[in-house]
Length: 278
Image (cartoon, rainbow, N blue to C red; front, top):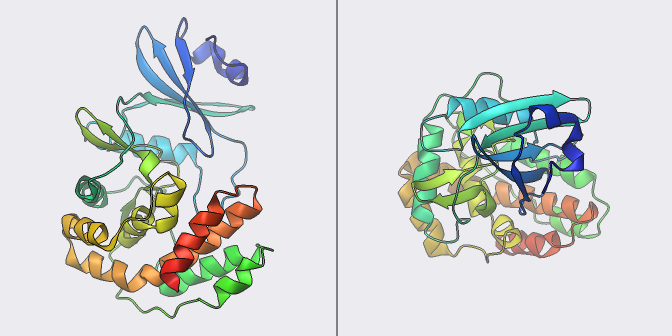
């Protein structure tokens, strides 16, 4: 196909005489594979506004992360970032391989590597500590008119957890962002990284809702424990276990917000989070 009409403002700086293929799976931005003479790329067109209360959508943060992670066999290799009045485009190298489906241990090992890397300067700070996570959830829930919000409030947990050592977070560790390439597992979609609690990334991957939304059932207790064991940091695993009710509560609130935004598939995801809270 020709350069998509939605990218006409960027056409002069995009690969010429390329084969463009729209990619599915992204829930926020528009994404294409671009097969050109000088390489195989992903072209991501960011939406104009960011109103998501839990998952940020920052192209500059993504480009900074890809640049910082270049050559470390963790993320795609960076290309360029382009800005116009029409929006922002990010180009990076295309990774061949299916989306992650099973074997939790490589995911844990990859996250442990990410969390050991010094983050790029200027990343946002994610809410840290049980009180901050619960307050964020309350803020999300306050914007939801769904009657299920009142039900969820009945399950608001009381949580105490030891203080964390802050680290570099991916921020959106869901199955669709994990690719099994011939060279090993890779993380894509770095648009919502942060400096924060490593347990946040663990909680996102282990979230029943996120596993449901991306086409799996919730991980069972054996898989969750295998994941925590493979992460190989008992202090972080202990903190995750202590914080888990707060994470489940926040994710349940987020699911209700997504339903209100016109995403009915998040209703089942909400029910999966509520099941573990109850």
